[in-house]
Length: 244
Image (cartoon, rainbow, N blue to C red; front, side):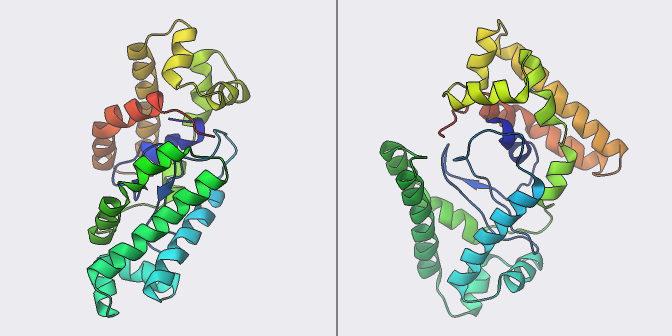
C-alpha cells in the first residue's frame, strides 16, 4: 500500500469500497461520508480535513442519485437504513439504483483514465466489478463505524514511522513508490525480507493501537478486532503498486 493510504487499510469496519488499485468509491456515513482513493500519489501531506472533503463530495453524488440532501442521507444511513431501503422509500427500485451507482463508478474510472491515472486495461478489469460493488454498497449497513478523522487519529504516527524502516525520509520513500515499486520491492533492495517487513509494520500498527487504547480513543475490544485484520491489510499495503 502506498504511504498516505495506511490509515485507510488498518481499521476494521471501515466504510471503504475499493475496486483494486485504482479508483475507489465511497458511501455516506453520518454527515461525513468516507472513501478510499487509490489513484493519488503517495504523500504524507494529505490531512484528515482533505479526506473528509473528498468524502463529502462522494456523499453528494450518492445523495444526488437519490434526489436528497447529503446531510439527510447521512442521517438516514446513521439510523441503520441501507441505500436500497432509502431508495425504495423514494420510489426507486433496486435495479435502477444499482445501474445509477454503477454508472457513477464507471464515470470515475473513465475520468481516471482520461487524467492518466489509470491504464485502459486496468479500467476494463475494474469495470467488470462495478456491478457487484454497487450491490455491496446498496445492501450494506453503515451504522457503528467511526469517521475518517477518527482513524487518522488512531494511526496518526504510522506514516511517519514507515520510512524509517528503510532508513529513508518521507520524500525519498514517496519517490521510490511513485516509480512503481511496492514496499516489498523497496525493502528487498535494502536487504529486508518480506516477512521481516510485514513483522515490522505490524509492530508499528500494534503500538499505535495500544496507544489509542491507552489514550481512550478506542476500546480494548475494538483494538482487538482491528488487530485481527491487520495481517491481510498489511499484505495489501506492502504489495500494492502505485498507479500515479
